[in-house]
Amino acid sequence: MLMKITFFTATFCLFFGFAGLGHAATAPVKDTKVIEGTFTLKDGKVLEGKILREQGDAYVIEYQVNRVNKGIKDIKIVPKKDVIKIVTDKPDDQAFAAIAKLLPTPDALTTEDYESRLLAVKSFITKFPNSDRLRDAQGILKKLADESAAVAAGGRKLQGLMILGADYRANAFDLDARVFDAKIRDAASKSQWLVLLRTFAEFDKDYQTSTSYREVLPLVLKSLQTFHTQIAASLASFDERMEKQTTEVDNLSQRDGGSSKRALVEQAAELEARYQKEKKAEIPWVTPHPSHKQSLEDDNSFAESELPRLTQLLGQPAPTLDGGKAFRNAWKIIHGDAEAEVMEKAISDAEAAGLPEKYLKLLQAEVKVPAVKPAGK
Image 1 (cartoon, rainbow, N blue to C red):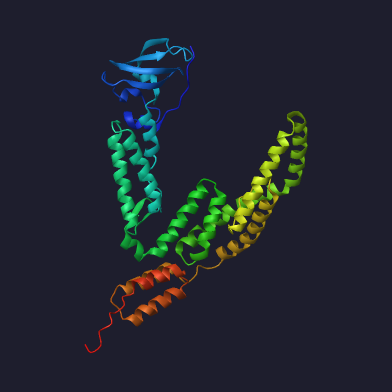
Image 2 (cartoon, rainbow, N blue to C red; image 1 turned 180 degrees about the vertical axis):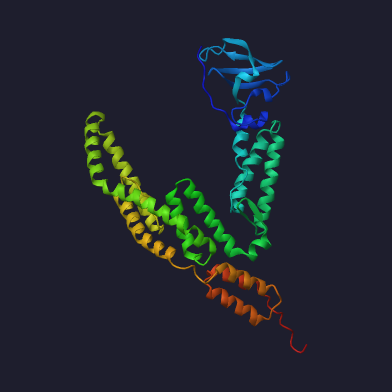
């Protein structure tokens, strides 16, 4: 008997109300509703077919005896406790699995990000109007729409919580810094060193006076050391590896008519094109590749200049300037009906605290400009 091994999907778990390698006994199947798919048993066998009905503590499964000849079927009574995995073949279940992953949403999505997610859920609802998962899809749609509206009104999601527009604007500098902090920590947890360093390069420009900057700096330094070790090792072995690769490709080309050599030339051209594109865009950390020496040299050189700078920064006392505090102070004064001169002084103090221009403009936009009284009145 030829069986097919399949993997358990989160969609079916949600459909039957259990997770992990749970037993199908927790998922009652009614006679009026045939469940089709694959059913993995304790002994490793996989039945491909459908559950016709429940029979006490067992399922009555009609399954394919032979995958080649789909016409040969048999019926087997299987104890519920022996069914450890179920995978449905229903297209709406598979489609729902994709939109179910849209929640919970990550932090700091833009309205454009939400629009693409909303479109995907609306597409599911339109395509599967009679799906058993319709109500779940509508719930996802509402949640996304609510968050999208909050972001459109100036809100921002941070660490899983939606911060409303007024609250965000009053603490914009520190909250934006925390978004960068979260992205850096997430990249580190996934060993995505290039993502981490590029994110930090943006963070480093404007947020050195934030508390988040000092808090995440040790992690960035440690990640940079790891990245540098990898790049340096790849660069040190580059000439030897390329010489070996050339020999191997020459030998292969004699047997494949030169297709291996052409493929290598094409790869080299693609790597060079990407490198030139990133350099033109002034991306601080180019994408390194073991077969592209210049990308390795650039990143190695940048790492060697950044390591002592960050080490020195980390060894210094925390700066007395606190950009977040300066921003909050100015915001409070501006919204406290202070005189125009006092407001301008608060903005000047915020500028002296190293706040980037975009945050100064945000404060200036909040300053109440007194209406000009008509002459003679």
